[in-house]
Image 1 (tube, rainbow, N blue to C red):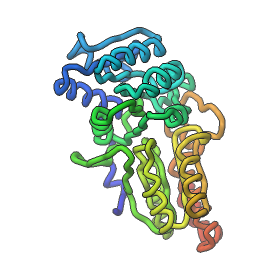
Image 2 (cartoon, rainbow, N blue to C red; image 1 turned 90 degrees about the vertical axis):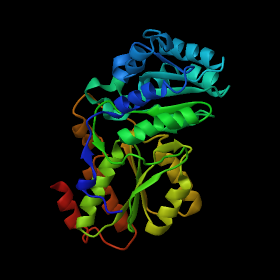
Image 3 (cartoon, rainbow, N blue to C red; image 1 turned 120 degrees about the vertical axis):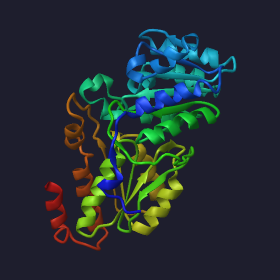
Image 4 (cartoon, rainbow, N blue to C red; image 1 turned 30 degrees about the vertical axis):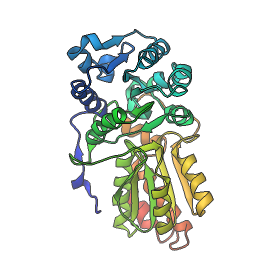
Length: 337
């Protein structure tokens, strides 16, 4: 697949809105499923469902632990339950209830989490869910999905409904870009190769897939063909496809809008180390909090913008011994521009 800027369009709605619209649509299919939230209905876009089905919508106030516990109680009675909110609150304030009341008994509760990573941007550190993936992928029985655009967000809602047991879906605050066409299919445990290449594999998920694609386009100008993988299913992750790609390219770069510690990079590094060690790097938050500010300025400052991805990829290709950093100096000049 040859991906250029022409393949990517500016999004009109955020993934949280696309997911909320799909929850509303699916509300007509199953009159038993309900939605819980903690006074963040407008921010999570769960209010769309609440306006249409007020008798199936429960706002328990600013009390995520109680909200998740109550949702577990209703799910224990046989209903499918969505719980909407900010990722940072659902995964930290309510963590014990998620673990013990939802995941342990394998209840049909779907966590519908907006403001993942630094996509919360100007809302600041208290609202940026930069540790959420680590928590959710660590709990047994939880499935984790991270869509990158509105098409995959709507599909994530369908996957959550069709998958028995707990599911966590990480969504974005603001509209970014669109990539997938209507009708694209997704599966739990799957991934998508959104650009093919032979020199390096770049694996990412959510918003940073767009940065990886932009980086790949810059690298192609100076002869480096990067393969880009959208790892939209983080748990279970499609490690088989990553390993297949890495066996062909000989290098792996993971970039994610999350703490590096216990993120996707840790899992893929372990998988590659067991299979076939190759030059590897991992971009993400380096054991630090971010700050309030412009989204694009922050992802660059904290090291996982397109420019930072391209620079890291250039270093890895040089580490393979096929090119030297001097050979790749033109790439760095392109990236700086």
